[in-house]
Length: 233
Length: 234
Image (cartoon, rainbow over all chains, first blue to last red; front, top):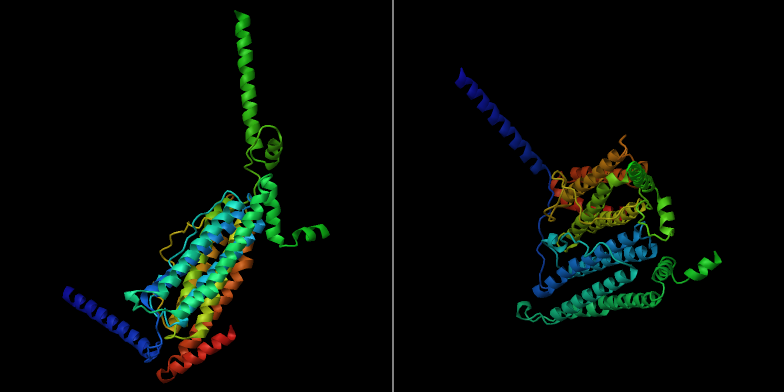
């Protein structure tokens, strides 16, 4: 009796496994989800490893800057800090830095890169800090952050111009031109803007820091015409 | 001798009364911003612990909102990487690239708005707080097919929507520490309907594409057409 039961149970289990297998093979046979690979000439892909690595790493650097600006925006948005102008400035900067990272990605895609392991490109970036003493300190840290990004961009230009033996000494004229002509110009303009803010606010902070930061915050919120606008209102 | 004792009792009882009244007044004063502001204006400096935007159940919901922002940021990177995968020359699907990029942008902008909401309610943003949720959809491989990417997308969006539902459920509970109509209303107005639309669109796309991929001989042309229409619809 026991052996009969065992036999019955075993046969049920085997039939069940066969049904499941058949069902799975049916689904696989039904759908053609993946297109067959196409033979593509590789001669046009000319970027070399040392240069690619620097470019990929720069994406993460830009995103760390984006997250730090996001944290600055969050800090100045707090009700107990209430610097809406600074918050707006830093939130905008955060989105701008994210766009910079996307711009680098687009360049790599244009040159035939990023066909595999894209997960390595973005590794959960975090902000470098979450609170700041005042607006002036945050602006100074932002300038340091930008200077650091600029330094790394110069390093990319230098590596991609002369990648050494690992990169077959391939001078990547176009990438270097793009980094120096387009990308670095944006960096230098951004740095100059931050330095200007630091100077103007820093001068005002000497006598009455609270009033100075309050006024400068309004300027950042309403733009250059903030005084004439508020007088007209 | 008697008069000394009498004097001592009187002195001690008056000290106790003064200490008690100071203690009681402190308890009541501490609950209100007004008394703190008045205190701050007097020569003795006062710490203002109640002059903030916190009220209702926000204190107990704050961690959930911080986790929500971090989830939105994390999903934004995941959709960005999915869009990168479809933008390389071997996959070359501009429609899928734009679709996933638009999801990444939506989540990034939502994260910024949610940070503004947290700070509107008197909170701060903790970028390092992430709730552990082993059942949540994740991506470990971005080298996926067009159909699989849509499947991944719907799972990721559902996890965002479900997290929103959880916050809504907590903030609508009849509990003194959790009930917060503003948070519930914010989740409803800002996310609930938008998420439903996105998930419905994705489900429609998945089922449509699945049917077209049934015929092996036409599947590659079907993918080309589908990608082009996806781009046009964006």
